[in-house]
Image 1 (cartoon, rainbow, N blue to C red):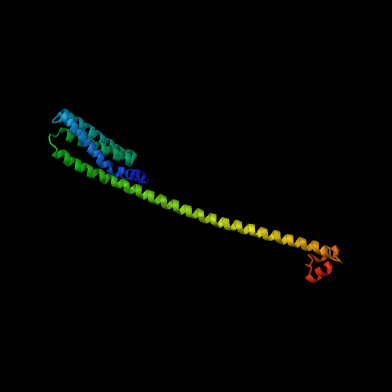
Image 2 (tube, rainbow, N blue to C red):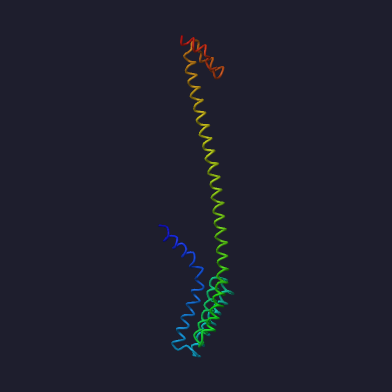
Length: 203
């Protein structure tokens, strides 16, 4: 029953790794289709792809120098390389040069992608470590606060029990013969009745 879920997880993990090869293979296939439909040895089509590739490269240079956005810069240069690759693959009459360029483009794409993968992995590991440390810190604070609250509750219970016992002792003392409240106020808290005095009182 777990096979479909496992397969989906495997495909989800493998899809980003296969993306560069899929991209370059798609460009090669489209360029060869274009080649079979009139682009072979077509100077106009080759010039068009050259202009587009140069424009994408210029956009990458501008993005790098003005905005500093690495994603935008990488996308522009990747588009420039893809257009140049498509132009050569569409213009050539054989497969040797297109396949050579395809292998070089794929290797370059994986080189660039590996850099972003490493950066993303480092950021993910750092985030998970920070989250784990924060969770442990909060758990420690929670344990300390729980112990403190438990201690306060126990102290309150002890004080209440002591107050109850003291009140009971005062009530018992008040019923004994010879109890003098004025003398009690002058002397402070009375002594608790002894067992002999309680037996005499009950007898």
